[in-house]
Every structure is written in C-alpha cells, then in structure tokens.
Image (cartoon, rainbow, N blue to C red):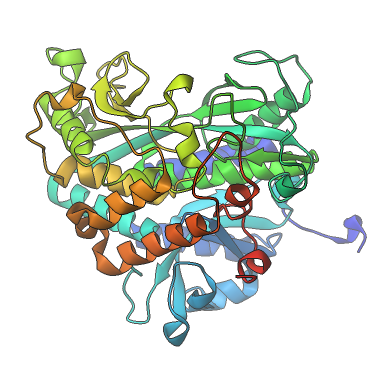
Length: 476
C-alpha cells in the first residue's frame, strides 16, 4: 500500500519525549491506577492514527516477548487477553497452559516510528494465572507486588539505576552465525571513550541515545567502553519496576538500532576472551518521603547503618544468589580478576574487584553498587533478589565479613549447586519457581562443554537464553 494512503501515528522525537516524560512523572507520583487506565483508554479511543498496541512481558529467564493487539480489539477486550503459557520457556505446563495478560497502564510508552514502526504504542503487561492472581513465574509482577507492599507498609520507595554494557559486532544476527566462524568481528577498535564522529560505533551510540531520550529515559552520558566495539549508554535512576522496564527497553532499542544498521548489539557477558567483558552494575538506594535512607554524612563512606546492613546481607548471600545475577554459561567467563571483574564477595569504596562498591555520593545520590551483575540477567529477578536480600536476608557471623577472603563461583555448575542448596533462594521464590529456574539453567549448561577453556564455544552462544531459537532447542 502506498504510504500516502496510510494515516498512522508518527510523532517527532520532541513530541515523543514530551509525552513519555509526562507519563513517567505520572508513574513516579503513583497516580491512581484507575485514573491512569481511564486516561490511556481515552487516549487510545481518541487517537485515530494508532493501529496496534504492543504488549510486552518477560519470561522466567528475562527474555522479552511482545504481542501486537489491534487497537479496536484491545479497547473491547483489554481485561480478557489470554495466551498459551506452555509455549513460553519457564512458564506453565501444557496441561495448565491458559494465562491472561493484564495491562500495566502506568508503564505506557510512545516510540519512534522510524525504529518501532508507525501507528504503534508500547505497554508492559502483567501475567495473571487462571485464578486471577499474579502468576508466580512472572517476576515483574512479583517485584511490583513486593515494592508496592513495602511502600504501603513502610513508606519505602526502592530506587535503581543500571550501567548496561554491550558489544556492537559486524553483521546481522552475529550471535546466531557464531558457530560458522567462531569469532565476532569488531566494528571499532578505538577503546575507552574513543571513537571518531561518524564511525559505526559512534553512530550507533548517538542513534540509540536519541531513541532513549525520545522515550523519556533522561540520559546522562554515553561512550565507548574499555574493550573494542564495547558501549555504555547511561540514564537516570527510577523506581525499581520502572528501572527494570527500562533495562528491557534499552536492550530492545540497542538491538533494533543495530539491526537497522546491519549490525548486532550483543549482551553476552564475555563474547570475546582476552578483553573486558560486559557488566550491568546495579546501583540501588531506598528513600522515604524523598529522604535517601542510605545517606549519613557521619557514616563510614557516608553510608548509613541501614545501608551497611543492606550490604552485609547481600555479602552473606552472595553465593546463594549468584545464579540469579549471572544466569548463563558465558557469564562465568566475565568473573575473571584480570579484567576488573567483581568476583570477590566483599565491599569496598575503591576496589573494583569487589562484588559491592560504595560510590562517592551525597544526600541525593548515595547508593550501593552491586557490580557482579551480568547484562543478560533477568532485570526483574536482579532487582527483586537484591532488594529482598538486602532488606530481609540474614547476616553472617563471618569475621570481617566485608573484607573476608571469599569468591564467587567461576563456573555455572557451582553456581547452580549453591542456588539449589540455599534455603534463602527457596524463601525468595518458593520451591516451584526456584526449581523451574534451576532446571532451565541446567538445560542450557548441559548443551555446552563443561570446561570453559580459553575460547568462547559455539554452544554457549547458540544456547544462550537471549539468542536461542525454538527450532534449535527442539533438536534435543
């Protein structure tokens, strides 16, 4: 059909940013759910140029799934959207496959037409089981309920910001073709903070930053990272569920922009041996009525007693939750001390080999940085496990806990063993979800050579949970 015959929504980047920032402010101020729903439904009804609504949700491993609903259908049936959960890895068994998608109207985004297509808007969904309650395998829903309960009972707001690194490689679908050459090709070899204006890496970063800005990310800085062809695009902190949603959108935007350029954005933790891997440093804090509870001008490193207690609990359970923060075979290549890897279960203001760093902060920015998180982790699982552990976990009696000689596992098998044996992970997720998650990790590991060796194996790329395709898994 000729473009001039279409009448689909395509807004300028300035118009998109204005709409998204307004929605973001509404979400930040915890506007009443029924009021937000009413506003969104009215907008969709009145805006004739929208043809479809893309509903996003994540599976147990954190892989993003999307369904496009015709707008007219959605307006009539938004409260009864069903789908087959047995087709989603880690969700229901075939015998009990029917699940529903609720709509989180507060998590609504307008996206650039040149990247996402015209006439569409995005919204995050909530997976609901047959009984009408939140589905236990939808960790976004688990996190949201936890955060809302804490706010209701204690007035806490959980805040997070993530520094997500990735690589840009030559060719489309470079990960799926990795087995053909057993190597990735860099698009840039400039290194930290260095790329020429207009080269592919800089163009990719600039374009991605523009898309993020238009979607209300409130960017802070962006730059090439230490390794060749590596990037990092930073944006402001947010309430924990919104922050996790933005991680999913960040990776989606990066992948789509790269694809449009005939390239691949990869979030494998260590796609190339011999250079720095990619992390997802997770900065967290807790506020109450706008006051940062982690700030104490008289505290050690300016961190409050509450903040240090939070750190101590995470250090106590560091090995228990390692599989949640480092969920793939490839992630354990990154925990290599030769490349600033945070593999030591300790806390430090300066040592970047520590699992937890206490960055320089002030009354507004004081926070705890969990550095051992891989960029392929389920962001909702990361946020939930960090906050749940930091607030509700146990504190070990280990002498000098914050500087003890303790290390994270250097392979996924030890991490799985720690995860399965830990009582704490059962407390966090319950037996069912814990067992399903561990089984998924086992299935991936069993498809890969047991010893990591000195080069990246084809299987650890092909069977990575963010790369797999249904056909490949069905061969086994």
